[in-house]
Length: 247
Image (cartoon, rainbow, N blue to C red):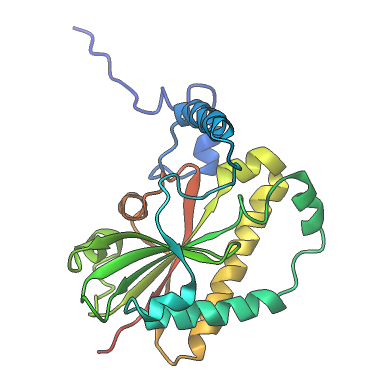
């Protein structure tokens, strides 16, 4: 009897192997999401127009309460507030790429296609780990969710990287797929270069605090995507930084 084996990649890469060249096998790349997302955003745009409200680009579909970074002091996360304050100073003094303005004229690269930051920090008031989203372009913070204990650490990082109580994990994400569709290869280079520059700025910002830092290149993609609520296709995690707690 002839047995027919199913190739799990056949449906995803039916039109070619270009996705395999762009994304590694552990990433989520579902082509049908493109059509679904366009239809959903078109529906939302019509809804907002009927409500006679301005349609503004938003990174998160489910809007949470937004607040400024300095309010994190009252939430029990002073180190994040200090880190973001130092980062904003560096952002103002950093010279952008000379052709960045020409890209801005083609689309909303300064906001819609900017990098995003996610912080997972232990609250000094409640003692629980809280995930926050931060937009460097629009300078606001959103509460995402709480995580119980350190189970998130064991799922996302290698066991050789031992967990310390009070560790702060930071993730830098970018919407590479959308940027490539808008600006082609220039958009891809912009995401990669800005991701590296953002990582270096955060490293410089942390040096003033004296807190030990561990840059992490290897982490488990799918658990990190589930933790942050990103799909790994549109929003991709570029890098991670671990700010060590006290030993």
